[in-house]
Length: 325
Ligand SMILES: Nc1ncnc2c1ncn2[C@@H]1O[C@H](COP(=O)(O)OP(=O)(O)O)[C@@H](O)[C@H]1O
Ligand SMILES: [Mg+2]
Image (cartoon, rainbow, N blue to C red; front, top):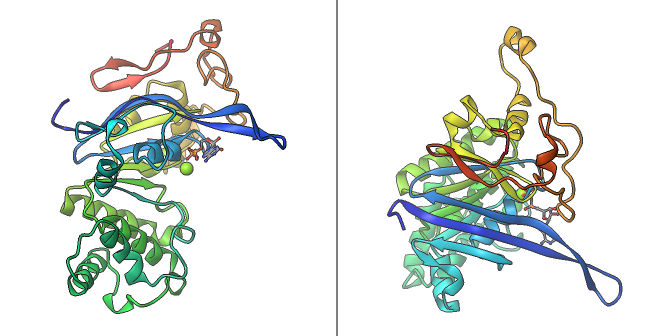
């Protein structure tokens, strides 16, 4: 495997059973992630976007082994996690962490901030004594811009932005290489979103981190991401460098997502052609035949409704799953 590849995802599937009745028989499956393949390169920020429910969070969680994937492979630093022993997975996990969407729900309200941050240090036995642990916690708090004197406070005593800093501190405690940032600012006030984004960007630079950055809209990830992947109903539709994706999108779905972003120039905004996405995506329990986007696609032809397009390299570094581009 290429030296620059930190994470390699191959045909990853994550299906959840739908159970019904008193016997809880499986009556179907939700194809939350249904065969995605991509690499995450060392030091990059890979943006992952798509409408709510398209499988972004599930992809992130399956990569981190917070879910046991239905099938497919996840390689981390050249090791296939599926073939590792429980002990090896435990050790690998230290190097991959997650920052959650909701800083209110993801922090234990009964734990003091210092304990929340110290916990991963204890789980992975990273401090040799109490004094060292205390120093490490102080160091991490300082890195994320939290006042060290507040270490004995509880999460509810902090504002939303500061709570997300606690979540970031907890993720950083084990000195990971790779962090899945799952919509880390979407629950926050607009006025503090930029601060958290700047902090994440600063930390990435200072600590040499690699991010999978999940967001539901494209405007968010543009300036953060080296490359961007666009998901729809459990599948990857397009992936390329961020600039190319915004300047020369290929997939009709990407074009529709882009045209939903307002242009801050009124004359240009009035003149431009919009592709509007009608309705909601179909259910991932019963995805359309052929191309999953065909039921909402403005250019779909008969073939699209029958044959599923391959995710292929269209031009250098630019992947797309569409018969018509
Ligand atoms: N633990 C779960 N059990 C059953 N279905 C789930 C579970 N997690 C997610 N899903 C379903 O999988 C699909 C993808 O969800 P998710 O990955 O959370 O999407 P996104 O993060 O893009 O909004 C949705 O239809 C969701 O309802
Ligand atoms: Mg999500």
